[in-house]
Image 1 (tube, one colour):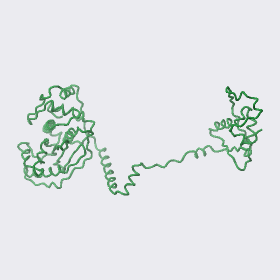
Image 2 (tube, rainbow, N blue to C red; image 1 turned 180 degrees about the vertical axis):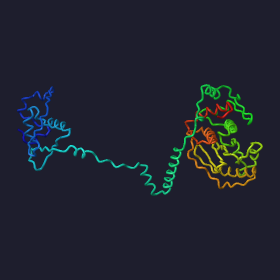
Image 3 (cartoon, rainbow, N blue to C red; image 1 turned 60 degrees about the horizontal axis):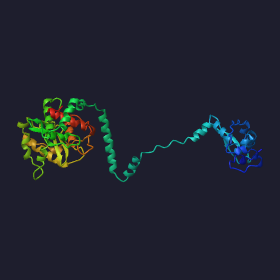
Image 4 (cartoon, one colour; image 1 turned 90 degrees about the horizontal axis):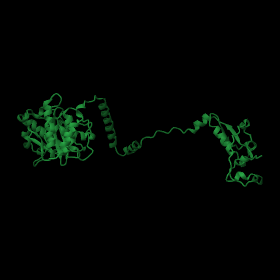
Length: 402
């Protein structure tokens, strides 16, 4: 019998004794594998002094002794994957060649095997923000502003939803064909629309600015603003009382040697011409053309505030100064009243839809006016611009804004 456990479990190849040469068929290329079930673990294995080497030597067939009981041990390991099991341990107190079999509590081992829960880490941006905040006090102000904006957003979510059903009515198949013929038909010089009260005519060539990727021109913008004005007169209970300046007004007003020329626009707003005074309006819309970009200024006469909307999120303090002076001069000239513009504030905007390309600024400006003249928030975005272009064509062709 083999009594040395070190030799028993040593898997290194050793030179075979001469007696093993009697079984050459076990070493040939066509060697056959013999399978057998692992013998049961003897009860004596619970004892610290049990000689496992002797047990394996007496239990294994001669052909399997060369693996040093590895397959038997593997069988025990596989069988130990239940509620009870064994672990092999060595002890300095046990003589060489003896294998110690020790019972263990599987629940305890399982708990030890489970790694401790990882501590929840802060997101990287928060950690970086805290480190940067030690050197820049302005970040603290930004954090306060973000918190305030979150509160505003929560209030907006709690507010009752507005009725937008009339703003996104799909075009019928007949209307789509009419719009397509207007934008892509032949005869570019053909006049398709004539608005008599404003004397604005729009040819097919002018309509083509409402194709996708087109920059809106003065004729289309000014005619649409006339339609919005007529809509308010037609249904005063549904829409705010507004005044819509055309695209030439601000250019005239901000012209001249000093960058301000009230006399050039003084007669544009006589009561005889309009039928009302600007001081009686809820809102006044002023299109502002910044070289190649359309923006919008809004004078809220009712709330005494000023707004500047830029679909590229830009700012222009000069527009505010020019219009402040204009309102003071206009009220004094038409109503003979003095107003303190310095007390007027710039209205804070909760949300402003922004363009995501280089050609929809004019369309954004028109929809700012459309939504605000209804008393609605700006509940649209870039994804609606293609529909709004087609709808604008339809409304201009019919000379009626819905």
